[in-house]
Amino acid sequence: MRDIRNFIAGQWCDSVSGKRGQVTNPANRNEVLASTPASEPADAERAIAAAAAAFPAWSRIPAPQRAALLHGVMQKVAAREEEFVQCITAENGKALRESRGEFQAALKEAEFQIGQGRRFGDRLLASEVPGATCYLARQPLGVVTLITPWNFPLNVACRKMLPALIAGNCCVVKPSDLTPISAALLFECVEAAGLPAGVANLLIGRGSVVGDTLVTHPSVQAVSFTGSTEVGIGISRKLESRATKVQLEMGGKNPLVVLADANLEAAVDAAIAGAFSCAGQWCTSTSRAIVEAPIHDAFVARLSEKVRAIKVGRGTDEKIWMGPVCGQKQYETILKFIELGKKEGARLCAGGAALTEGIYRDGCFIAPTVFADVRPEMTIAQEEIFGPVLVVIKAAGFDEALQIANGIKYGLASSIYTNDLAKAQRFVAESEVGLCHVNMITAWKEPQLEFGGIKESGRGAPEAGESGIEFFTHHKAVYVRGAS
Ligand code: NAP
Image (cartoon, rainbow, N blue to C red; front, side, top):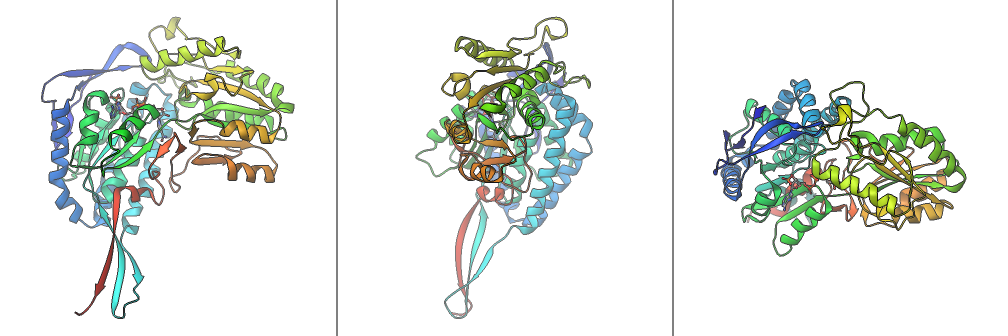
């Protein structure tokens, strides 16, 4: 069992109260993986004060040098791959193959953001005044709070922390209380790379206890949050009357539209990879398959057959394809949605229950579940379940499929499977999402493009990509004349 501490002002420290929390293994609820600080508002204030104290010196370091220091952190991370991979699987539950994928994704995103350190700077423009220049200066904000979820505990922390620090800010990272171990490993790398004390601080504790301080403290200039729509909207309400910048990456209910001319096998495989990888716990997971009538029955039959064959087990077993879901609360929520789907009259085609016998007895295991005959207005077709549950909706044609895909409060990711270029182009133009795919899974993303949703899936500037660093800056218009 690990003994984890907060990392504040370059020191590993316990919470002021000395109260402790625990991290348990979703594949075996009886196994305690770590003892953690149960931080309180006083600890959040300490972390914010440490970041504020480090800010003046850090913000004066040129951006390429800040990026080089972060490169040093990521080299330490890269050298500890197997440790990170084992740790992500232990605390989140996902299969080792998926933890390796998350680890590599974190490195790729970091590589891109570190490169941004050499592109980051002011933009010079011609002035209309003879002998004068004008330019747009990009300046850091100060202290920023970075709140991360449990589904990608390493990748999301890196996605936020690197651009925030390269832009010259100092930060407090608050990982999910369910998965703080990977974040603690990341901060061991921060320490080993010699980042100046206070530039990056780690605070472990319940969001419901430390969240208010981290978000509303007067020294905090920006909050970047990834998590549920409910908590995200709550944060934005608290900041309504303040100047604090807010970036919210929230839930999704992502559609995969399958048209009659699509390659059936490819579409089924995309639905499975999109819906059941990481036990359906990607924000960009495929949660609705909207299938054109002529291909619908064949799609449901093939999908159900393949889903019933998915091997579920502990993430540490290299032979399994899908691990448990993360945490007792999420486990219970998913099972309630499954029962609701049955009550709403959807046709259960695969799964539909918890797995509780033998190796599954002590873990949060749920059989991969497919519902067909789902109507767009059903709760299971409207609400984010965030688990291994895929609903299939029949559409009479492309127009109806598009209407169903957009008829939802979320707007994160979507995909269409078709060989009809005109329909694919219309889908790209009219799909109400932040990430759109053609003949690819809904969850695909690459570091050079922005990442973020619209509608109830996102607020504020998107993360990552070329403009990801912008959220962590403010612009100052500067006019200079050489002589007075
Ligand atoms: P969550 O319950 O909203 O928690 C997210 C983070 O917010 C955690 O660190 C949590 O801390 C913290 N938090 C909770 N209450 C808070 C409060 N009152 N003030 C400040 N922070 C608070 O979400 P989750 O269950 O961890 O993650 C799953 C959700 O994230 C899904 O809805 C998924 O779609 C979404 N997600 C979205 C994206 C995206 O980019 N759009 C990416 C990944 C996940 P505790 O753990 O201590 O409660």
